[in-house]
Length: 433
Image 1 (tube, helix red, strand yellow):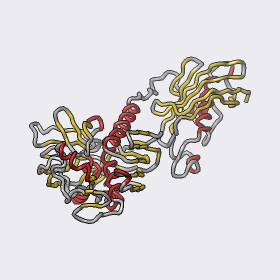
Image 2: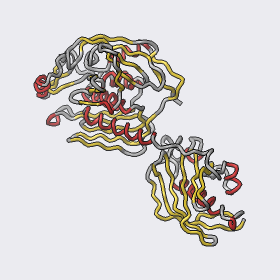
Image 3: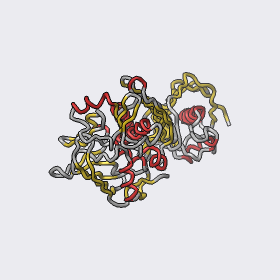
Image 4: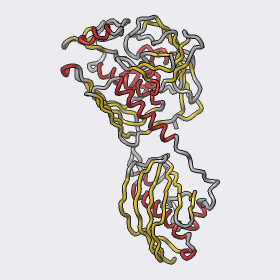
C-alpha cells in the first residue's frame, strides 16, 4: 500500500505574480499526515489559513481563486499541480501576497523547489478516490468525463479559436512523467484575448518571459516551444492542479475536450460531494446486534466453504423474515485472477450467490426448516448498478416475501458505502440433507 508523502524540508521561491504583478515569496512547509494542502497568508493579521478545497473556489477566469471568509488566494493551480504531480499529499503553502509567483509560466519552478527540498514518506497510508461510475460535465463547448481506471490517466484535446492549435495528448500521470513531460509546459494566451484580460485588470505581470502568445498561426515567446503540443500539456497541468481540490488522489481516467478552470473545478466539487456522501454513510454496528452470526455460525448453517462461501457474518436479523449479511471483498479472492487482470471486478453472479446464501439463512431460521439445504432456483428483475472492487465491504440485505412449505421468495440487494450495487428477486428451495 502507498504511504502519504510530504516535503523533507521547507522550500522557498520568490518572484512576480502573473495577474497582480506583485513580488511574492512562497514557502512550502512539510505537514503531518492527513493535513492535505492548505494556503496561509502570512502578510495578513493572524496569518489566516485557507484549505485547498473545491468548496472554496470563487472565480475561475484564467486562473483558479480560493476564498474563505475575507481571505483570497489567486492562481493556485500551478503549485497544487506540482505537488500532486510529484506525489506529495500534505503541505502548508505560505505566501506573503495573494498569488504565488508565476515563474516562467509553467510548473517547472515549483517542481525544482520541491525536489530540492526532498520528498519523504509518512506513516499513514494514502487514501484514493476510486472512480466507480462515469462522471460527465459539460459547459458550453467544454466537456470533461472521468471514467473508472486503476491508474490516474488524462486524455486531453485542446482547441483554440477557429480550431487553431488543436492538440491531443493521452498519458498515465506518474511523478516521472509529470516532472519531464508536463511541468515544463508554459501557460499560453491567444492574442485576441490579451486586451480583454488587461481591461479586467488581469495579467499585469504577464510577459513573453512567462507566457506564450498565439497570434494567428504564429507563436510569440522568448524561446521556442518546448514541446510540439505544449498547449495541451499545459492544459493537463491545470487539470491536475484543479482536480487536486477534490481532496483525494484520483484513480480514474480523465477525458477532457477544450477544458478550462471552470469545468475542472466543477468536476473537483462533484468529486468532493460524492466523497462526502460516501463518508456520511454510517457503519452498521456489529457487536451490538442481537442474534448476529459470526463466520463459524454461518458455516454451521450453510454447507458452502472456500472459495464459495460468500457471507462472512450476519449482523442483523429482524424476526425470521429479514437479515443483513456482510462480505469483505479482498484482492485475495481467487476469481480476481481472471476477472479481470489489471481491473479486478467482483462477478455479478457471485453477488447473486451472496444474496441467495443470506436468503437461505433467513429461511432456515424457521424451526421447521432446521437442518435443510437451500438451493438457488431462479432470479428475476436482476440489476447490476455499480462495480464491486477489492477493498469494498458488501452489505447483503434479504427479506422473505413468500415462504410456502419448501419454496421461498426473497427481495435482495447488495450495497457498498450505502449505495445499491446490485439487486434482484430470488426463488430458492429447501431440501433435506
